[in-house]
Image (tube, rainbow, N blue to C red):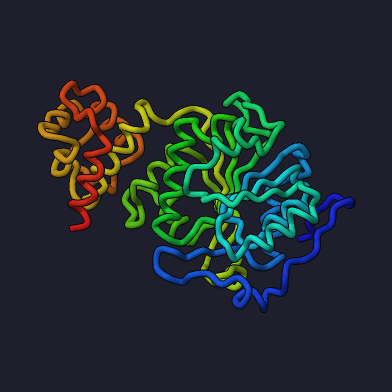
Length: 331
């Protein structure tokens, strides 16, 4: 597949992929696995899927770019400006070189992508994309994409969770509209995201993803195309035009965290985790409450959360209760 590129743009290739294991040393420790797009072919195909030629004013906010192979391809494919967010020391020199060769069209910020940097980056404090303005939610945001390569770790899952929450709440980058996301992630993480009710992979992040966006699996080039060599795939997210939930995200996330601690048990056995006396909510539901949590649809979970939100005796400090349930699960 030949990718169209603006004729006036050029950037030096990154170092040979044979040298990546030596130059870009990253931890293989559990919980710290940082994977990056390595081969130029895969980076070019991914950039082509973003269709910059149809949106010449579209910029990119990229998290976890690594050395910048995908960054380079997006620039050559026509991205207006690219803001990278990367705090890995081993990648800084490569990103700095891209920044210099692009004349500032690529700009890296040495910040932790997990620290919710979007308000600082896009607000008055840094104003990394000066021409970015909010657009109506009815239309897909035409001036910015969110792109990333999610770590294969619990921190990576937290990153996805936070992005899906922000999309539902229209916070962070989503204050600017329905921002499309293109995320490379480990195949098992992608499988969990799209897992339908009743499948073993379905978890609370699956439900959040279903509530937040339409998802399409675009490409799975194989582990040899990544550093480290993990089997990653590219998933495209388009936030829903019409909200799928009737409750606040704080309440919905609390209900998911509570119920999915025992997803193989029926609802009528675990609803007590929502708080003392929560069994009273069962009689207010329109469906059979003997259904197992992992078989529940988004609509059914939304109904439980709505009844919980309307319950006068529900807990008011939800965050502390979430921590309590998660600590019990770890014991």
